[in-house]
Amino acid sequence: MDTLDPTPLDRLRALARRRPPHLDRARRVLAAACALLAVATVLRPPAAGTPVLAAARDLPPGVPLTGADLRVLHVPEELRPHGSLTDPAAVVGRALTGAAPAGEPLNEARLTGPDRDTASVVVPLPDSGVADLLRTGRRVDLVGPDSALAENAVVLSVRVVPGGHVLVALVRRDEAVRVAAASLGEHLAVTLR
Image (tube, rainbow, N blue to C red; front, side, top):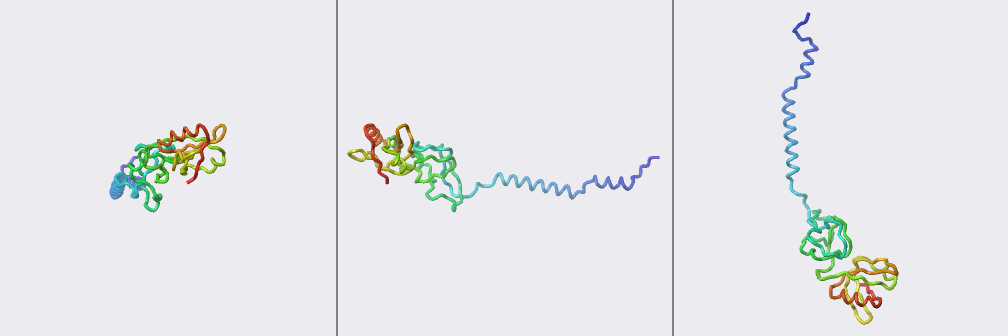
């Protein structure tokens, strides 16, 4: 015969299935706290730090920079690279003396002068000994048989070509034609600054 009276075991099972009201409240409070934390994370102000200009992508040397080539990084003041730049207007139109990978902070030493009227010129070098002395970013003078042809040129690269080495240098545009014409007939001297 079936009875409607629950057994002690049935009573224990019923108690286990029933949630106490304080647990529901605790779950609601926890859910609200998580939601507030998520909103606070999204709305928090940007990381504090000093703004510095950096390469927005891998940049080659000798090419005038545009605003699209730059991005602003925020770094702690104590980690800010010496001489780093912050004003895009001081950089746009200038060229790098050597390649810069994406994210590298830019400083004055990595850029050509503010004279934006520059050109790259290729100069054959007389021997590999001269090529071994030249490094990207180094300043040199290019001298012909009778006079200096370009002063304070920036070494962009030194390359090995069939028959020797060539120097790729960034010079003022008015000097580039003289240097190119003179280098057709004979080797130019390179003086280190």
